[in-house]
Image (cartoon, rainbow, N blue to C red; front, side, top):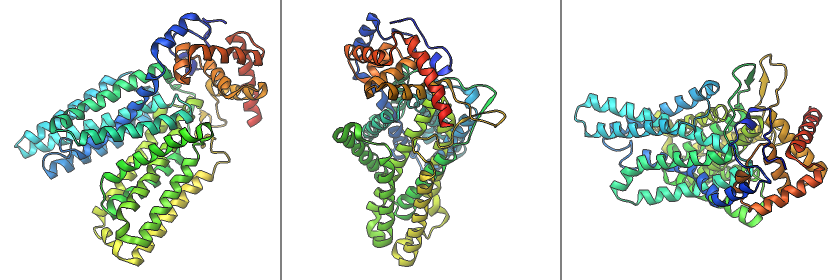
Length: 504
């Protein structure tokens, strides 16, 4: 096998980490030394993003600490800064480039923000307190947005099934970490406000070494369609869940934390029991069913259903968010579309509508009284069902839920979609695997070979031993009728071009 070969062409293939290729003896040593178990553990660091968010907004040492006025000011500054940063980074995705290569900048902003908030609580001057609160909350909001987009880049290099599994495990890890911190001493809680994001940044940087780097977006000649469908879905679900949980029943953080644990545990259990027969799209049906059950609880039981309705609404929200993120990650991976572009707008919609739903009680103080009025409850139930219908129609508007949701790279002239080199190769892998009758594992090995993955990366990604990967590679080459990676690349590229032509 031609161990020194690297696929030419698209930027996605040029950014993969240098290393041993399949068939080299030193590659086996690297893969065994790294240890497959450590790979998914690093990916669970995204769960610390949820932990940090909850710690910052709910613990006494977070931005909610100090006086009520200071906490409100800092919380508002954090939300506004996070929203602005997400939209700004999405718009500047071409020029800013991947964020995960500069984690220290984001963590420095987080640390500075927490120090400014702490200084404001110690200050006796009202003017100084307000200024420190605003600047501290804004810095933490911006760093939270950057951390979210850094992880989006990492997960945008993974297949949807792995996004679902590692995302679910991350929900459990984040929930468990928050529970431990919330029960700890004040000193541990204060330290966690800086230590948790630091650990998350470190895990993000470590994960990026194995999933490969994100390609730089072309500076000109191509534009990207706006991701209005995921924006609409995440916005609708976020508003509905926050409205039920915060504005209608005032249940606070607990239903959201429990919902993360419920969704994470349910997906992990399904994967263990059903294994490869699990389909990510099932999560959409389960989420819509939970949202419908929440609306029914509101309509029938009123105030008596405060907690179960909030928990069901938040479970639907978390489940739909997990699925949508898995779908966006797959689009990023297949189309070489900047993750900052897709996730920036989608997460911004989630942040905006989440807080709009929660702030509705401030704009309409009479909302909590709805729970005692059958007529008002019926109106609320109808509104909830309308929102469920909106999500369902958007979801069903695609012929196949594995499609691109109309998110694509288009020539600057706007006349046709421009497939990336990565997309051509992935389409070719699928067609070649079907034509040659490759097994699922052999197809995975072929895809990783065409992506330019190193031997070390393949062992870690597949959680297989070196000898097993070698065996799959030999069988795959034999079925395709090739002997080298270069020959396989030529065959796959030709198959990919035919496949895209056939798709129209």
